Image (cartoon, rainbow, N blue to C red):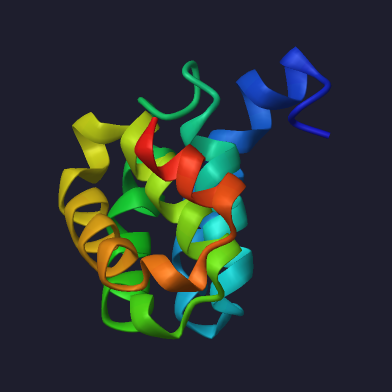
Length: 116
């Protein structure tokens, strides 16, 4: 819904992301990567306090499990962290390091996205 509605994006996504931060450790890691991508690509959201809380917790939860992520989830993590680099620099660096070492796990079109 956030991808299609400016009102939902502006008013709800930040608070939802902030609330999600509290339980992020219990989420499937692929779902964390998906929400990370959604929040990071909504510029009006990723500067709010809920989003900042979410990004901080996403680093705490994802960083130790980057090696366990499916290639698509790792790619989403790299793209999301790169998009919100001001708040996700450590996550971007950690995810990119893992992605480089796991390059053979990615399909050619995924590698292209990683290198852009």
